[in-house]
Image (tube, rainbow, N blue to C red; front, side):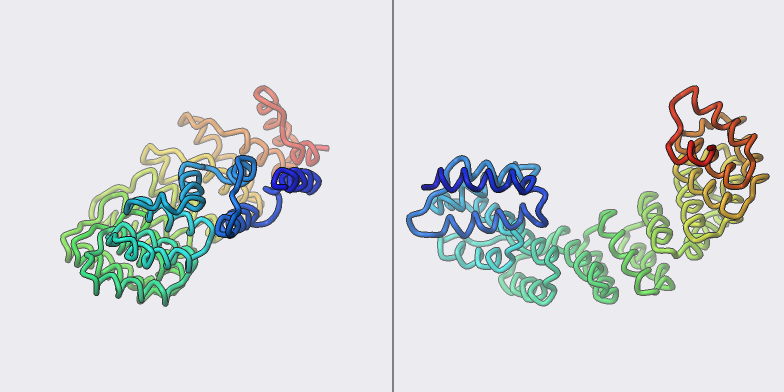
Length: 364
């Protein structure tokens, strides 16, 4: 009977174009698998298991989890309970993940910080903030000392839900406990600050780091600038760069590229152009994606003269425009009715590869 059902399932999925094309197919398949494994007298076979595994990549965590779900007797170590929590997280079943603590205690094992962190991760992913608060409180009541991952997860949870004040508070608690935030955690906090339009607290965050003997590294400053630019707070990013220059430090190529990209996104074309010329002056070259973005913006404003001068200067410095730049040049020159310049770019590009359909359409 099971084999018949499997055959019908497989043919049905083939007719639908495969389960992977259904929305949330991996999650729902895993949930049904877990539910079926709990039914009295029913056992999954290898075919059913392989159908579920095919929907997930990577499978390193999932396969051991499926074995534990099918054979509860395998829950004979604290590590297996961690696996169970993580598996329920994949299936987006936070309540089942929470119940694992009770099962663990009933089996004679004591949850440690690893188990609580695994649960916090599941709750953060599901945006279950009230439950996360209760779990953290329960963790402290049991005398379990949070580690860096615990605090990082709390910062991420509050930041992702738009609660900057709480995220900042959790960040300070992390520093007070003696843990240095990683780049991801710092990035979540900066994103939250920008979305809350509280960029004036930028320097407060930097002071927090200094007060706890956690001097910001170069990578932290890079993440800070990138966070400001990706959240359309270029004005604040420019202030930070100005402060760096006032201290006699020339910004790196990374900083210049991030700033130019942010200025392009906000339509500050002249600022972006000045930034790229400043980069050339200090011996840097723009990243290809930054150059493409600047080209698009200059074409929008019909600034052909700026484009020609900039391209000439960059080529003289050894800059090799990527294929995407030539396609933009062809299309942009055509739209600005600079046909000779468009065919000049086309003549260079065809030596390496075929131009895009969009470029050919513009030429025609």
